[in-house]
Image (cartoon, rainbow, N blue to C red; front, top):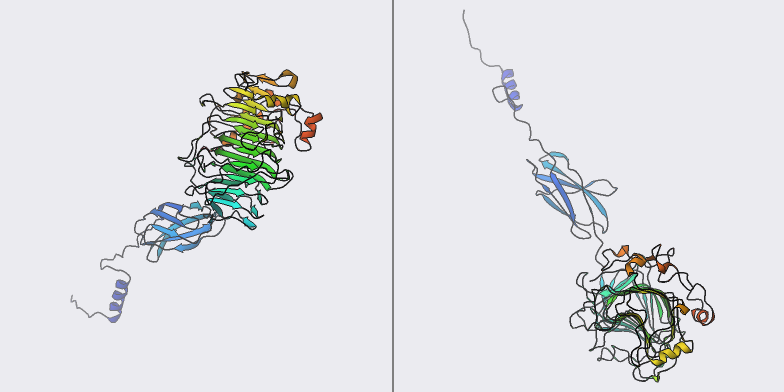
Amino acid sequence: MRFSVRPLRWSTLVLAGFLAACGDDGDGGTEPPPPTLQAPTGVQAQATSATTARITWTAAANATSYLVQRATAGGSYQTVGNPAGVSFDDTGLAPQTGYRYQVASVSGSTSSGFSSEATITTPAAPTPTIEVTSDITSDVFWTADNVYVLKGFIHVANGARLLIQAGTKIVGDFNTVGSSLFVLRGSRIIAEGTADKPIVFTSSREPGQRQAGDWGGLIIVGNGIINRGVPVILEGSGTGPTNPAIDYAGGIDNGSSSGVLKYVRIEFAGYATAPDAELNSLTMAAVGSGTQVEYVQTLNGLDDSFEWFGGAVDAKYLVSYNSGDDHFDASEGYVGRVQHAVAYQTRTVVPRPAAGNVSQDPQGLENDGCAGANCTNGQNSTPLTVPMFANLTVVGPPSTVTNSSGNIGMMLRRGTGGFYLNSVVTRWSRAGMSLRDQPTLDRIANGDLVLKNQLFTEVPVVCQPQTGSTVQGCIDLPANGITSELATTATSLFLGLPAGEPANAAALDWTPTATSPAGSGGLNAFTGSIATKAGGFVTPTSYRGAAGTTTAKWWAGWTNFAVN
């Protein structure tokens, strides 16, 4: 048999080339497929500002880049980036908005599925600050979309009105001496907050660093009447060219208006503009009854929390927490009315260095007739100090907090009068009440000093015993419906009152417990001079203290009980 070799035909060459193009490696095999891509793992998202976010993940094998997609909480995904690395910075976001992110791996024209979602919510945008460096002499409106920084002694003067929107924050600059706000006679402040949007005056320092005396305070000077003759220079004023002396004597109209304070907090105030001249958290000097004061809290001030010098302004729903001196202090012919108020002390406040001193004789309530220069007739100066304080809850510090003097729930002295009704005075280490000076006793005799239906607990004695010619002893307690359950503790009276610092401010509750003596025993009908003084402003209650067992928790939602 014979064999012959024939030359390859053209068709055979074409087939060989086609097979080579199709991946024939000469031994019948093919090229390996592209590598498999997995979605990246460990995807995390973090808001880095109100408008930016950083997305990170763990590198995926064989990936040369990544595809980043973003969606709003209820929206569709859109591609926002294609980085080569394992992080991506997203921009142009909206403040206070929720976002979702997913990431896919990419290699050439191949991409993986997407990762599991990572979510964020961007924070609110920083609030712009406006520095207030000069007096306000024409009408101005402060809005909640700014923070206003008081730098120095700021006066609302020349008949101007300062209008403040609900939710606005005003800070006293820690680094500027005497930062404070004075509303002078003839001018007005219209500060109307709400329970969910209170207006807050506070320190410029961050929470956790704030201290009593970080800034000055809020001072209102009205056209009301006082019992001292001109001049009477406002404490804390007159210390230099930027802080001129303010004379608040000479007012003629107890019905005048200095504006509105409603749902307002005043925190960490009380800076001393001179030695022993600390400003109060809220000073009301000769303020008239046309002024509205409701739902106001002071917090960790270095001097008095609320101080009235004459005038006739009424007030309801007040809270004083941790005062450097007295919680409520009235003198110089104050004839206004206060109902539903809380004074609550848990510690000795810690002042800012070189800002002033804590008082050595702090009291719950301290009322005087007249003392000092220019009293028209000494302690008998007219108009007499004859306020009405009804439905107070006045709680002193725990036994671990001591003072060299003070620590008396109600100090009535120097010829003061007044109507004191339906209140609870508890946890004061020296006495529940002290009646001092003969003119004060004279007020009882002539009907200008009336104490009715008060409850005293956790005090060593109701009245400081008679001593010398100053301390005058007590009154007939049963005849005036005054109850003394001295062994009953302050914490047992109310639904939410801790023995020390409140760990949760929202849990504080001044509602009497079901068995509390504060839930009953109130003077529930007014007659005679009490009814005349109460007018339509103060209403009788069957309970004693700032709230009853079924009344609204009027302090809830807008108050603050921070230590620093």
